Image (cartoon, rainbow, N blue to C red):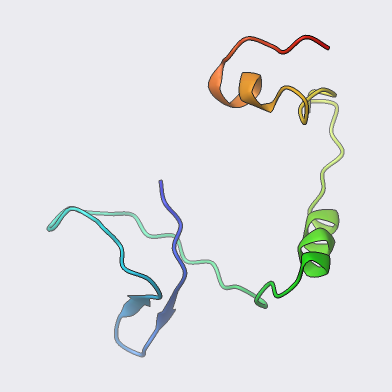
Length: 78
């Protein structure tokens, strides 16, 4: 799956950057409006704080062992 930024010109969805996709392949497109462009480090941190999740299902060592959880690589020594 890929994510791209695009805009709707009234007729078609136009990607902001070139996109390499196979010709004539059926795709599923998910549309999600962006409420505002992220313009600074502070706004990125605010976005993270606003979307943070506190759940017992999230491993407590996720930030340290992210490669293990994402790719299945061996856990790092603590």
